[in-house]
Amino acid sequence: MTRKLIDTHFHFTDEPYFTNQQRTLINLKFAGVVNIISPSYNMESCHKNYNLKRLYPDLLVAYGIHPLFLPFDIAEIENLLITGNPSAVGEIGLDARNTTSSNSAQIDAFELQLNLAKTLKLPVIIHSVKRHAETLALLKKYLGLKGVIHRPSENWENMVRYTDLGYHVGLGSDLLHDGYKKVKTVAKKLPSRQILLETDLPYVPEFKKDPFGLMNYDDIVHVLSNLRQVKTSALIDQLWENTAALFNVKVN
Ligand SMILES: [Zn+2]
Image 1 (tube, protein in one colour):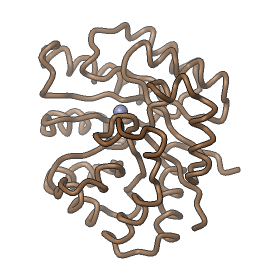
Image 2 (cartoon, rainbow, N blue to C red):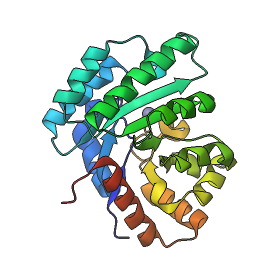
Image 3 (cartoon, protein in one colour):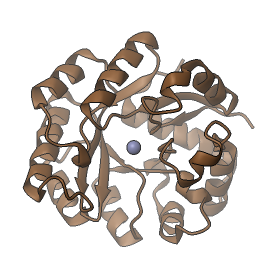
């Protein structure tokens, strides 16, 4: 298979990848992955990504604070976004499972970061769990912003509201799960220009068994091409084009 994949959501700041950087990069290369976007979720992962970007200038990174990791200093995020060569702001959003921060604190944090994305003309990586009505209402206030809804677990009716607003949807590891029927239905029906490949490694249920062996991008591409009834080569080309367009990736 000729491959030129970019994993648009791979936590390089997290273990076992962070302490095995060379091994991780080599394994990704063998799996046909030419690049990754490493998102941040708290201040520590932001600073790790900042340093990784200096060490590996071709690596793509994003800075942002996830709703489970509030409060935070917006000036520090702004500084990283200005000085740290980001491809996106993220991951940011709303999470109904969060019991540590109030709704209004989550909304404030999300809006502050949406504002930064708008000012700095960067796409956003959105994490939204069971708070889609509020997430959509906020995104409607920032029309013109681009971004991806990361790892959806929602039904089609919810997801189509995001794609109607122009947002992309990240698909990956969950397609390999026997369950997750909603994700598969969504994966079938999404507009082809709005799909992205992502794994969210290492946060995949099967991960603990074999962290490095889990780089089964072939399987993901195979399942997705079957679901969408397109050839794998055409799917890979489409994913590449979509990623390049959203994240302003330069093609070597
Ligand atoms: Zn993530």
